Length: 263
Length: 261
Image (cartoon, each protein chain N blue to C red):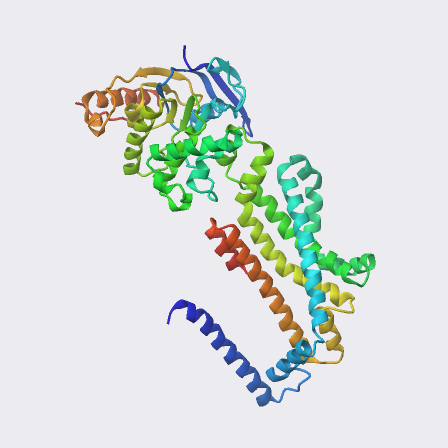
């Protein structure tokens, strides 16, 4: 049975210009231990989806199920990584990782051990006592990833976690995330607008249309793991990227000539 | 010469030059003592005041009204600022009155406060608290509202309680703003204390100035002014020190507050 399932999910919220449909007819399924990317253009309601899954926003129609129960509010079995690291600047890295342990009232002693292990996993064991301002953007985001895993959630929710990083750090973080994901064995719902990122990381990709977001395609990525930099040079990798790119190009209503590199 | 030495030496040089110009101007233009006392006469007045001890009761009176009023006013402002930022209803109920009160020059209330609270220390404390209240209140409310919304979302997603979010997230986030409020309030509080003493008092540095004015004892007035300046500087430095210590992660606003001084 799927761990996570969204069915005909719709979200409408009111704004000063009247009701805005952010999502309409969004479907996605995520199996245990699977890596699913939700790929879509800017403003397709990706962040709305994140808020719904995080339990911060109620859907107007459709259903979201996690572990066999509908999501009605924030749940302890979900971990979140935002686009910005959003660490507390007044706490050191280890205390930041411990934040969910504190808010959820979990055992602090066990939490500390878990946090230390996660800091090792993300390769920052030497930086536990550092404050966020003393860490680079990539390191901060890795602290954020450790934080999202500390309470052992069933589902890890990531909202364009590398969007704020420079291109080189980004590629490095993609490798890191794959490694962390394979080691931690979590199900990941990864929201992104980067095609190569989605293809590189995912088992499956759900493609969203422009606003209101609707699932227009589900794509299985059949590339061996662990994927490396060489994977990106692979012909099949390029094929997947092209397929996705043409899907978006066909969608845009403006007749902008698009160029797809031919092999 | 390194910057640290310069930062002491340069102002000192400016000071010496200014005092010398002051002395020279008095001699050159034969300014009478009751208009502008010589630096030496001011020093003498300070010495007499603090060594013979006449100034101390005035100094402590102002210090007392300042400290009590400041702590009282800022604490109340902090608590109400939190209420305001947390509750939309409270804000809607009281916002127009807050704006009206804020627009009014608070020192204009001094005579009324004397009528209500008497000529003693109480009226001075109330006056100081009143002028300290607004900058602290506004800064607290604004600071709390400016907490990174992503951080609050994250805390909600981690099932944090409202109290937890306020005390562990919003208040530390607003610390820079809150200290800016505390900084402004120190200076304004001193103004409040002096104005209340001007209106009616038998003690305090403000009273000392108005009493000396009657007798044209300008050297005493200068000595009292220097004492007030010392109080203000000491208060500002204390808050700045606490700011740097407590809000150690927020170097940007720490220097910003220093710059607005």
